Each structure stands twice: as C-alpha cells, then as structure tokens.
Length: 353
Image (cartoon, rainbow, N blue to C red):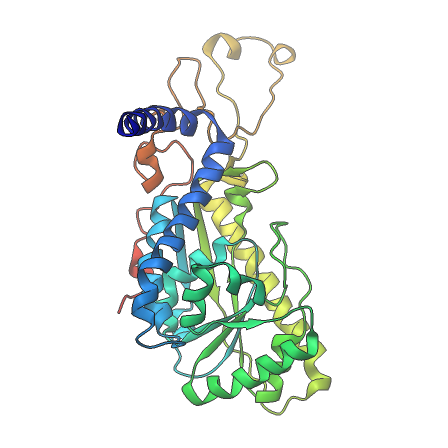
C-alpha cells in the first residue's frame, strides 16, 4: 500500500515539475537554489568520511570543489575566470572579494583547484549547519564569532601564523553581509589588519554583478554568466596600522572600477539591462505601418523579460522559441533565456589539474 502511494507521488512529481518550472519564475528560483544546496549537502555527507583521513586540511576543499561545481552546470551559470596567474601563486595572501550571494561560493568551486591551498573566514553559526558545517571544519575553514570582535581578531591572528608557514591563501568577504544591490559596499577592517600585521599582500577578487540574471526581491534566477577577475596583488610590506584606511580605499576603488567594467562587458555581450532582461531595441514595422505618416507611427520600446518570447508581426519568435524544459537546467539549446553559453567560452579559461 505504501509503495503504491509512493509511486503515485513520484508520477505526480514527474508530471508537475516541468509544468511549474515552465510557468513560474519563483518556482525556478527556489528550485535552482534547492538543487545548489542539495548538491553541496549531498557531497558533505559523502566526503566527510574521506576528510577524516586528513582532518582540517585545506586541500580537502579542492576535492570538495571538484564534486560541487557540477551544480553550476545544472542551474546554468558560467564562471569566466581572469587573472588565474594571481590565484595560483604559491604564497600566503589575504584575498578579498565582493559578496553578493551564496552563489559566490559556487563560483569559488569552479576555480578552487587553481588556488590550491586556500581557506575561508566564515561566521561561527555555519559550523552548526551540519553536515555542511562538519565537512567545512574538516576542510580547514576558519570560523569566527562576529559578535565578539576581540575574540574574532585573535582567531584570525592565530590562523595567520599557520597560513604563512603552509603558504595558504586566506579568503575574506570584507563587506561582511552579502547584498545584491549592484554595488560594492564599504569594507570592514579585519582582513586588512591581518594583512598589515603579517605583511601579507592583498589580492582583490571581483565578481561581476549578478543583477544580469538574479533578482532576490522578485525571486528570479535566469541562466547567467559571471566574470571573476583576480587583480594584481597589493603589497603591504612597510605599511602600519595607520596606513590601513588608505589601503582599504585603494583596494575598494580598484575593485569598484573592475566591477563596473566587467558588469558592463557582460551586459553588452548578452544585450542585457538587468535580471536577465533584454535591452530595448527598435520595434519591427510592417509595410503597412511604414506607409503611414509619421504622426500615426509613434513608437514605444519596452524591455521584455527573458521568459517572454518576442514575436514579430509574422508570428515567429525573435528569441529562441522553444518552450522551457527541465533539460534547460543544464544549459541546453532549448533554454529561451538570452544568456547562453558563448561559443568561445569553455572551461579552458581555467586550466584543470
């Protein structure tokens, strides 16, 4: 009897899933995040026993990233990495990156093998989110208590000594809280204090804006393309704590310039204006309309959502007219989103081990 109900449930799920995915942007939004988190949690469970053989070793993260980056293909996000030579440098550095979403970690999975030895500063609450928290601790993540500044600073200082000895990079999100506001917010000083005290270079890493495909407020996530740029390291040798404000301003200004440039490049490359919206273009006029006087042919241009097929007067789609299917989750040719995998882009942007 139970097996019959289970079969009925599975049949209904198989039938309804494509319908909801086809018709609801909110469903696609939550479904894609569910897939992302499910992949991470599943790998946390599977890999934890393996991590026990070398606990708290940051190289466990390389293995974890290889297993988790499949989520990017499933939810149709492409990561284009630039400045890989800076990421692969065999030296201890303090890496600072802008923080827009939990998808930032998914992007890191795509190029973690390039960084090789790298760990992340994370808030202590994440440790209790098992099985992920346990797997993260076994992978050498550094958990700090943000509510107690002195305790957090002490933990970071103690960890820095280990990082220098093992030539391990320290990844920090200096904005603190993730925000999808299409800008880089003011930085906290913690990472820069660590860099100056230990005389380690600052390596800025910039993700282009997610607003080209992600809208958390309206629960929209379209297929996306993100440019991740590693800028040349900024040396801190000879600097003191008095130089930290100027160092922060210099780093943030360089990241803002790169953020704007890379975001503009993505918008122009895929003809986007925001949240996967196509830029407005001149409407197609029929022969009958062209014959009318100018006062009768006032034109309006409207930005159209990626999910809405544009049609000419003859009824053919100006965008790919195929209906959305579950197969589009892996970036198939039937995905009607204007963001598609560019012909020139392959994972050769970042060489694998």
